[in-house]
Image 1 (cartoon, one colour):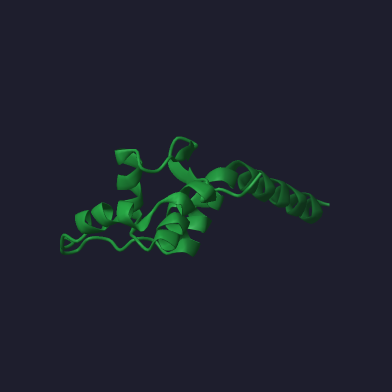
Image 2 (cartoon, one colour):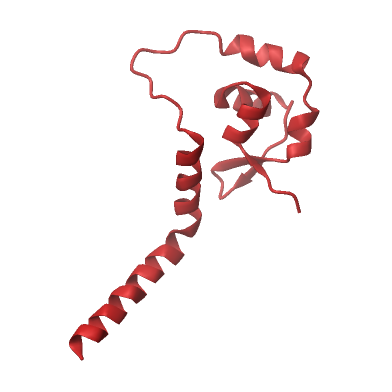
Length: 109
């Protein structure tokens, strides 16, 4: 199975912002899959199939000025780290507890 793209990856390929990609999903021009009910993922073939003419409307919609003090979108590596921590938090916590237990047992003996 082919790797699904994140919103940031789809936006980078299409040359638009992540908000524009979410608008395309809401308008039905792009099909998205939700993981964990929160993170959108896209099949690369569907993203590549979008034509530049379809993206014009999304680009014009995002041309409005941003609000003062608005947070900048997260960089791709930050989004990947956030996704990794979100989906693997149980395993990371378990590994930390196990490592703590091993250290405790080594010190106690």
